Structure formats: structure tokens, C-alpha cells
Image (tube, rainbow over all chains, first blue to last red; front, side, top):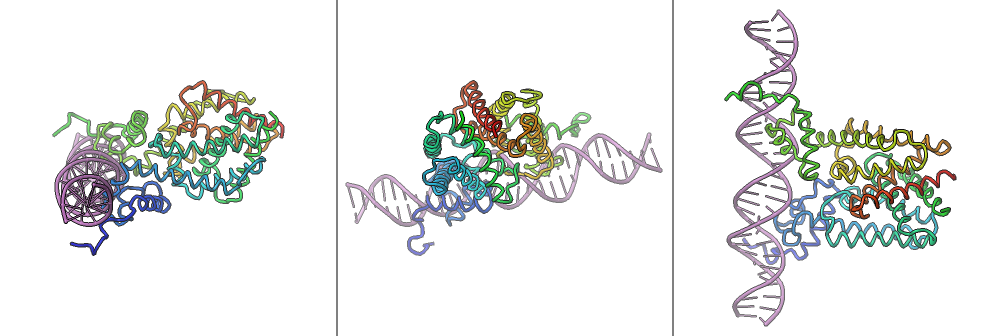
Length: 194
Length: 194
DNA sequence: CTAGAATGTTGGCGGTGGTCACATTAGTCA
DNA sequence: TGACTAATGTGACCACCGCCAACATTCTAG
């Protein structure tokens, strides 16, 4: 049963799986992200993805790593070189908006216990940590950068998750942005006076 | 095949399922929480739980609701009537400790998109919202209670999740507690001056 | 040109969520 | 007390999933 000439090998199944996985995640949520569905979408047998990903967690971690990079881009776009509290607030807004626009991806990135030690993941999250510390350190030279960035990241991360879970009304993006901004300002004002 | 006299009906399968589900969650994490495993543990056919829970999500939501109540108890125990920032910090520490001691349960409560609108869940989370607002309102009569409690809850919630995800070192409970305390103090000091 | 490494396929195993018809029991009402 | 009904538990079944192994095809290094 010759399938014409060379459609047997896919070409770049690894990347195709990643793309398919992200699409499934966006379209139907985390529960739709199965290796078999990914294979179907890539037009390939159900076990082919195992040639490129050891198991489901490996695929999920790869997706999460892509998510971390995208999040970093978003934050950088929100403000390339933040230095005052309002710059930081803009970045916080971008963080929360990312979570609300790609809820399933955000949950994969932060909400699952799987493969916390995957090299891709630890590298990506370490990058975010450094990013936040660098910004905070630059914005508040006098403060303890570690404690300060801890508080900032936690506040923003918590805002994202609570909005995602419907604990805060997330229907109106403007309202969300205002809420995030005022919360961040409150914290940063405090640090200025310490 | 008479199974003695009356072991056909379980007695209180609904409660037994809940208990079994919580045990599975504690012992082997979220992935072990399947309706079939619950049924096995309760000593009942795999389809019996469906008489009491419409589907898996319904069971999970019930477990989450129990978790909300337990969390509320913990917070109340940490400090019955908080009024100064340090009282609030103690409650924050209890919140994070709860997350770290029952990670799977905490993730079920806040980390899953399922059944956000289940009556049990909305009631339980509304109770938490009110609880936080009441505390914050009492502690800071002059501040906007909504904005203030938003910031407090988000900060604490974010600290819990980031510790849970290994983004902050959570090995030493004392270190964790110190981190949480200092972050909360920073925020509350700010509000005092507004 | 050929041997072996990569990659993809088929088939299968055990587990899971969910539904159905059926069996058993408990509660109610005459 | 006895019978009828609703509640509850059972077993068989379906589709899907993760994962594995044997096999087929293609690519590539020598």
C-alpha cells in the first residue's frame, strides 16, 4: 500500500506535535491534550509521537516551556526596560492578561505537579525568576531584591490565578487591569518607604 | 448468592466516596483520584458512585468544598480575631502551610478549571472572600476593603502556588513562614499610609 | 550500494469515564 | 403484615487513553 512517494516520514513530527498540542489546549482545554489526539491532528499513527516524547508529561513540559518563552516575550513587550512602579504595573497587567487569554496553557505552566524537574521547565522558570529580580533590583536599588521580587511575583501570580478561577470578576479586561495596577502600586509604594 | 444479610446497600456511600477520594488524593496525588479507585476503596462496584455523583467533576468539587471548609478552619485557628498586620501575617502563614501540607487537595481547590460554577464551590469560595474582606476591613477601617483584600489574598495565594510549584524553596517551613510574613508586612505597611 | 539508525505503523494490554438494563433492598402505605 | 415503589448497588459494555512491542519504511553514513 504505497502512500505515494514519501509521506511515510513526516518531516518534523516533533514540532508538529508541539503545535498540535498547543492548538488542542487552546481549543478544548487541558483534558483534550492527549498524545493520541495530538497524533491524529498531526496525521500520524497514535504511537508515533513516542519517537519524540518519552511520555505525555514530556510533551506537556515542552508545551509549558514554549509558554514560558511566550510569557517572557509578552512581558518584555509590555515594557522593555521598566524602572518605575508604573512600568512594573504594566508588566503585571500583561502577566494577568496572558493568563486570562491562554488559561489552559497557563495552567499547564503553573498548575500541574508533573515534571517539575524537567530541564526545560527549570531553565525557563529560572529565566523568569532572574527577569523579575533584575527588574525589581533596578527599580528599587535600596531594597532586598530577593524579598521584593518574591512579593511582586507572588502578588501578580496570585492575581492571575484568582482571576482564572473566577474568584475575581474577569469579564471586563479594563476592570481587571485596574485591579492589578492598583494592587501592584500599593505594594511598590510600601517598598519605597521601607 | 446472598451476601449475608445486608451488605448490598452500603449505608452511606456518598460520605464513604468523599473520604476515599480524600485519602487517595493525600496518598498518591491527583492522578490517583479516579472514580473507579474510589469505588474499589469503598468496596463497591465501579458504577455505584454514579448514584451519588453525576460525574468525576462532581466528586472533585465535593472534595474541594471540604477543602475550603478545612482551610477556613485552619485560618480561624491561626488567629480567631485578627486586627493588626502581624495577626494577618499569621493567617497568611497558615494559608501557605495548608497548601504545602495538602498539595493535591489545594490544587484541586484552586488549580483545576472543572466545575467552577458548582454551587458547593461558589458558596465555599464566597465564604472565603467574605472572611478575608471582613478581616481586612476590621484591620484597616480607612482603606478600600475590596481593593485591599484583593491584594492580600492574591499575595498570599501567589506565595502558596509558587512554593507549591517549587519556584521558591519550600523545604524549610521556618524559611517559608519568614518569607510569607515579610511579604505580607510589606503590603500592609503600605496600606496604613495611604 | 548497503547496513544500520531513525522514524512511522499496526496491534494489543490494562486502566478510566460514562451508560445501560437488571438485581436487591429500604421505605411507605394500605 | 404485605405489597408496591423508589433508592441503591451490580455487571456488561463502549470509547478513549497511556504505553509497549514487533514490524515496516525511509534516511544516511560508510
